[in-house]
Each structure stands twice: as structure tokens, then as C-alpha cells.
Length: 193
Image 1 (cartoon, rainbow, N blue to C red):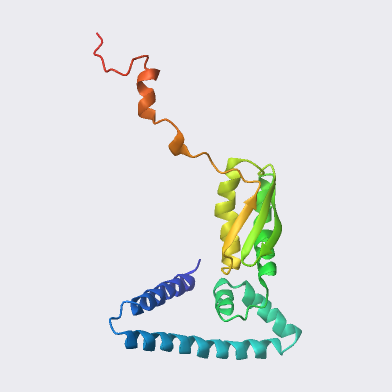
Image 2: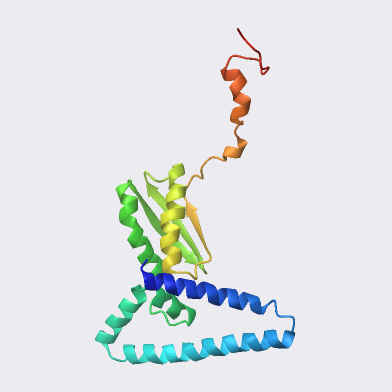
């Protein structure tokens, strides 16, 4: 991530904080007016962006090529999504995200299959040597989910077949319990000569 992206993310964080603070206003009239201002600004910027996208796509193939580049830019793509202007539907964005991570999965002898998208829920199946192994869950969470949510933040959840979750370590005996048994003792601390 480059410096402009960090600056942008910082600004987004600040905007989210300010919007959250609107809910803390004691005056309900002030709350409603602040919400209306935010909504009006979003609508204004959305309309301007829609006009811009319209002009670009009206340029024919060169314009569509530009929109394709814009759609690949994470920040611009999220802005297009916010205003319902992204040139690719959810299915395409999820498929592109999976195609990006597929080479990494294949280097580990695995793959992922898109079973379908129901509403905003993505259904996947792990394949190959990743299928059924506990490390598949970590691969899914860190690699696949990151790619999908980055390309399609409108995805609500991801369901995966063929993934065995890592064992729940809280169900194992604490190591402290095993120390006396491993030392050959009876659990009593004895001073031995």
C-alpha cells in the first residue's frame, strides 16, 4: 500500500468516526440535520461520479478500457461500489479475486472452486491437498477471504466446504496438569536428595 492509500484510509477512518459521533448528539434535530447533510453530499458526489462514468463509457472501447483500469484500483472500485456504479457484478468480482489467489493455492497443491453466490453469501469448496487439512482454514481466512472482501466488500459472508477447522486447543489438558505425571511424581512436590 502506498502513502496516498494510507492517507485515504486515514481520512475514511476520520469520516467514520465523525459519522458515529453524530449519534452522540443530544439534540435529535441536530442529529437529523447532520444525517441529511451527509446523505445530500453522498447523493451529490454519486450523481457527479455517475456523470463522469457515463462520459467515459460513452467514449466506446477506449472508455471501457479506462473503466476496466478504474475497476482494478481498490480505492476507485470501492467508491464505484458505494454509488452502485462498478462495471462488474458481484459474480465477476468474486471470480477475479479467486483467480488472483489460485496460483498461490496451487503452489501448495490446492485449489478453490466457486460453488455459487446466494445473495451476498459466497459458497466455496477447497480442493486438492488443501482439502480437509487444518491449514486450509488458515489459508482460507488469510488469503481467500482477504482477496474476496477486497474485490467485493458487499459480500456478507463466505461458506466453505472441505475445510477442517483447527482443533479447539481449549479442550486439551493444560500443560501444568501434565508436569507431575511426566516427572514420574504423584502431583505432590517433594524434595529429593
